Length: 614
Image 1 (cartoon, rainbow, N blue to C red):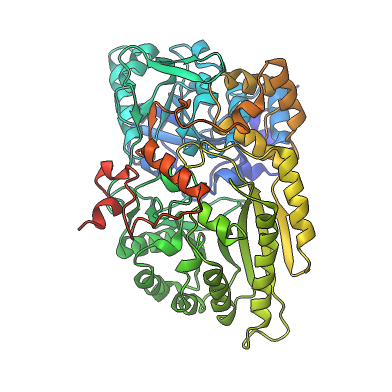
Image 2: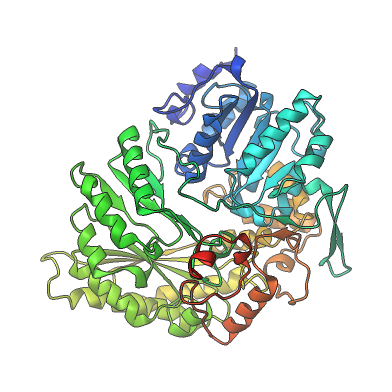
């Protein structure tokens, strides 16, 4: 005798991942709903519930009386096994209905190693994996998120993608769908019309052709699809939708706190950073808007901590005015303010003193490279003295723990640059013990986390080869040997996972078959180290005559057509080429508030591109 869904909750390790019913979750009457949307996060509940984009779109869609957006997460291994054994299909948390009965299944693609999890969730739903095999009565599968700037490796599994920010375009897609439903829905006709919406990419309406050497020869639009698909942005964040309540989980999640988005985009132009380019231009919220939204979230959720969310919080132009406004009520309510993503040159002593009245946790900064030459090459635009001065300010204000983020394998990097990471960490340790007002009896903790560089689309380094796994592992050993104090804790990223990310990041549609076959051979949780198996992936690629170094370890010519060149994120290719050349000369480019670099983002006539000209 099989188990039903309620029985399964008693048999798994963390039933709170699947039961739903949390504070602020939204239940609607199905009889009053026209469109049902399953928002799927291809990872565990604890990860997905920490994602701000899911919270935002969940609230936005459920504001509409005719739409019911429900949450869906990847089940852990114990739950998945029980579901398969008992023929229970993937279900939503709110209604517990099978999601193959919904109108839309939307996936957010935050990282490349989630691709097989997407396929696993589709299979658990009882749906064909390939869009070509899904019929008019199947849900439409839609993707969004940063990986959509090159969705080609998963193009065969999705009906459509949303490029850029989704708040406006998702409602336009749903309204179009309703009109098609009213006159007799046909998938092909809907997708044809959806392709005309700015920001919507329908991959089945584009046909790639290849040169003999395997590079892209051309991408041809079909059936009236636009030659280029341009991303969508929200110009005015002060008037755009932001939820006044979040769903409060029953179990601990990765970031268990309220989050207040303070701006989008980044002024800096670090040459390795995809987010810094694809989210341009910078658009800020006013301090008054941030203050009101932060307070409303804390009151509706009961959280005693909230973070100010952005790519670089210290670059918020009015942070010195914002913090006192937040502290005015946060101190009385004993609510902690977290400032992630601080720039080293954006950390002032005044800011440290203002934050000092609240609970202190470690500060996090990202020098990214250990030597000045390499920091200039990647356009980090900070000096070693600024880094050390920031450490002195933090230690003088009472902090005893600092987290430092670096990247290994950056273009032009040498072993001297690798050893420079250890040298810089040691100098920060020395700063602490040179501080005359350091806390008595307390030592310093310096955590050094080193990820592996992955060249990404729409960055100046999209032409660069990635270091091989062997070279990255040699550099990791060299760094470990260069650290001579126990005050520094080293965390390293697995080089083989970064290698696979590099294959997918710059891949084309020929990888769809690789991803599907790897899934068939058991790869379904590649983002989790305990489940990742590079051997399976290499075996699949060998069997399918795919050479991974072609995607990951090959330098590209400036005139090569990329798989994503028919997608427009507002960044001129000529600008990226100029930035790539500057990197090889270690020449920096000033950030957007100092001088306009002519990247192309001014086409949207909003944000810093306009503000700095007024």
